[in-house]
Image (cartoon, rainbow, N blue to C red):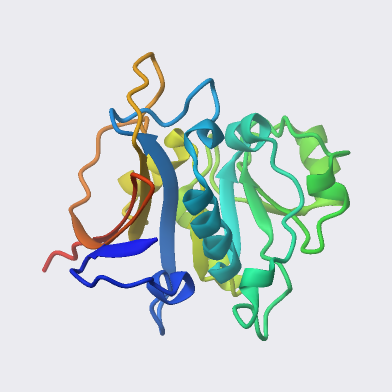
Length: 240
């Protein structure tokens, strides 16, 4: 893997390249897309991935305080237990050995007997709203840390604030497209880490954001390349 922007021909230290800024909360999106903008192939984003993408994916999880994902992404991508990695050495000093996963779900249609709620070394968090099914909410509260944010739908501003109040200020969101769109619309996205797969796939796959239009100006701050994949890091342009 080499850095091609800024124009430094080196083998980058991935953890340093993606280090969180000090002294403030930070929310980053991490997504993969095809060259023509599809967020998945054969129904899964993993089919667009590469060894380099998976390597960066692992480091981003090691750097994060919490990994956020929508329930549909958790089901489709088969989320399970996050396990410590050798590449995390030194990244989690003073923190739990793995970051918790926070699942966003209004319906609470979750497999509470699955590994995500049974064997995770860091207790899973579920973020829902007040109009979620009451009986399911009680069942979830027995197996996970429950956050109720919003009335008819999940209020992302309140949800992120609740995570911050738990000391989880380095937030990594892994989608899906609807969750990304909500976070962008609420002005919560600080950074986008986007892997671009050298494939044209066509079809009806969603883009990495799928929801109400919102405009978030971004600045390209870094590009890495490996085997034709581009790994772009964009940071939000702050307006005066």
